[in-house]
Length: 172
Image (cartoon, rainbow, N blue to C red; front, side, top):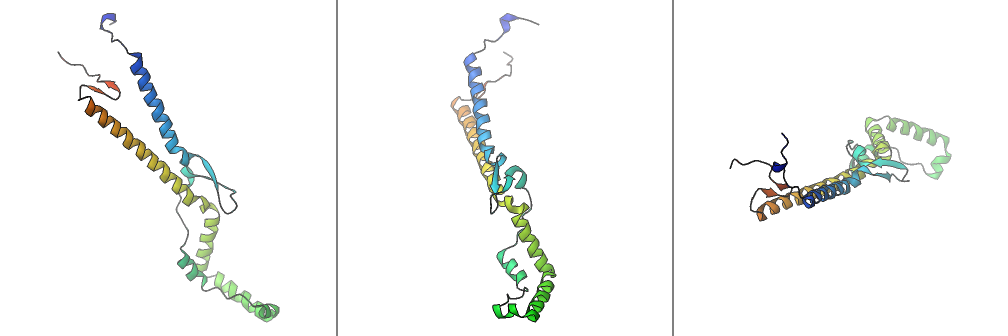
């Protein structure tokens, strides 16, 4: 039923204040998410395009230096200049190299290095950017929570908070 006498008097300043709060929160959330949703270059030549929100969730398949050293311990020693001139020594070296490359540990180490130089180039930097966004969002949530607590404490729970008066009706 339409009853103009029962309409509330709307304060335009309160509406603009709420609009300003929403706009400020939107800008703050966008700023916190910025590191995760913008692209960046990675790799030794900076030609690999990365996006943290996509690449940060991949499993890290790199091996530690100790694991790589243990895997490559089976590789033959490099030939000296004199051995390099001897065809029989070169043939023995190639045979030892093929045998070492056939070992599963060496194949796993080669796959880990290929992954780290290829698709895995973006993982560590992407995770860093995701952490920055997470810290920013957490700080924003903590600040908002602090404002809500401080506002409700200063107003003495008069039914009025950060977003305005309570909308519940009393039965008086």
